[in-house]
Image 1 (cartoon, helix red, strand yellow):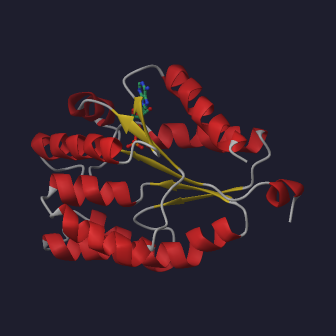
Image 2: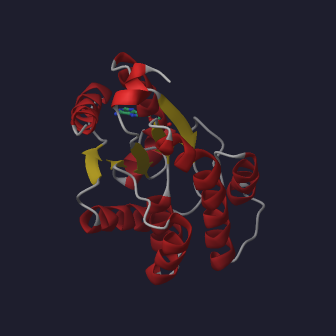
Length: 214
Ligand code: ADP
């Protein structure tokens, strides 16, 4: 175990936002920042993060997949349970930091806001699977849906969610902003319409605060 691990307890950071808001872009910056500050970190993603989770990810994102709203929600939480058990909980217990590209706020936003799954159902699964585990910090990259769509245009083959209509993405964004109000102590809303440098200056401030928390 390195000295950094011995003096610092683990921290759980999640990145959220509509597709095209910039999560992947900022992930590299976060990795560099943590390395420069001698923080031992694990990088992972949802759905995914384990062999089972990655198989579920393929099913959830494949445009050909037909799933009921509840089946989709349960699959997301099945992947999450395996992820927590095999990756997230062990990393945090070992004093490592863990950065996940998406976590449960995505389920509230996409399945709750986007698809209309009642929040109470998502909350019941969250309680069951997470048993109180919550991120220490969630960076929510917020951007008007039209801007995000413009940034993504022509850069990737749309997955099952990305190919949804504009209204779906507007509901996802609204649900994220509602989550940010409900959990304002952990969710930081970052205006992702600014320059990459400006956004990353903000990210650095929030990472710095988390590091100082000791
Ligand atoms: P996500 O991972 O959230 O889907 P990406 O990081 O892939 O989003 O970003 C989508 C596109 O927008 C990429 O082409 C990226 O280079 C570009 N991009 C990201 N952030 C900004 C920004 N602040 N200003 C302009 N373009 C950006």
